[in-house]
Image (cartoon, rainbow, N blue to C red):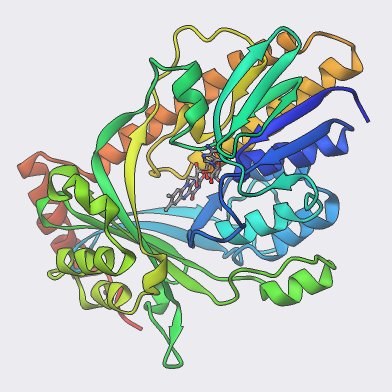
Length: 421
Ligand SMILES: Cc1cc2nc3c(=O)[nH]c(=O)nc-3n(C[C@H](O)[C@H](O)[C@H](O)COP(=O)(O)OP(=O)(O)OC[C@H]3O[C@@H](n4cnc5c(N)ncnc54)[C@H](O)[C@@H]3O)c2cc1C
């Protein structure tokens, strides 16, 4: 094992991905996580993993865990769709994505449940991930950095990596001028079991679609399904993984997007029950299928998300502490790039550190090169997701009338309704 020690702050997507890579390369790696246990917060949402995320996972995970990841993604259809509709599910436009049902083409994006992916990534790191360790601050020194925790303890490592998500305390300390901006929207997310009373809760035509329904007063409602290709319990057993799959049933992930003035700040602190009620009230005029999704939700999983967008650091000095993922480049969820970019960072940082170790080069050189390369692609994604969010929340009244009334009416003359079972 290398004498280089790496302390990762945060056992989220990027932290665990980096830990696997570095462990395989022989680094002494430890991960420190604030939560007391892996699934203490119900964050039951699905994420789309694109070619960058898939490549990062393939590079980092042991082969059997990468295969388990693939087995528990949603089945890939010949074609899938992203549909933008009005509140009555009248189609405005659709994007079509050609799929590869064989699953062989690893450039084809796929859907995975985030908690399931995190559980897969915890396998093999049991003695390396320390729960209940909330980092408060860090100090950098010439030979490394010291990370201090809320329980009074601290550790020293050659390198500290801040992978502590959107509210990163380490970013506040080391990049204080780059707190992310709030953007104009809030989201309330939830999940609802896909099959209830022995029937599908969404029409067949929409089973392989992401749908964004634009409503009045700049409100929008998004949903998509998470269907497991192989039942997680069967797949975990097949790959002899000792973790318990956190989710076993297919579900629909939904999200209500609200302008922030319609979502007073205090609502962020509301219980899941109250958030579900706020969501129900806000979609009263939407199609009954959409109302039903919220009404029949697993209330515990309802959560509020403030959409934020990072600002690119103009100066970012190189030290023995660096950052990955949402801690440094949070972005709105439009486009599904936040997690993928976080995984891409983990793979890139691992590559740079491994090269430094093999060539006996300085860690500073590796960190500087990582920060420079990462800033370029990550902040491109931040800008792209902000632009896409603006498109989905068009404010121009004439444009909204055309999109919400005229186009769906014209399309309804020629197209079969999406709600046909
Ligand atoms: C509803 C929703 C849907 C999304 N869909 C997609 C999608 O389809 N595709 C996509 O690419 N992205 C998606 N994202 C974004 C994606 O989830 C994030 O970008 C991704 O999780 C970021 O990974 P990360 O490793 O930076 O941080 P996280 O995964 O957030 O992990 C941060 C970890 O740090 C821990 N932590 C925080 N503070 C401390 C502390 N002080 N000390 C120790 N530990 C700490 C946290 O508990 C957490 O475990 C979605 C997000 C949401 C909310």
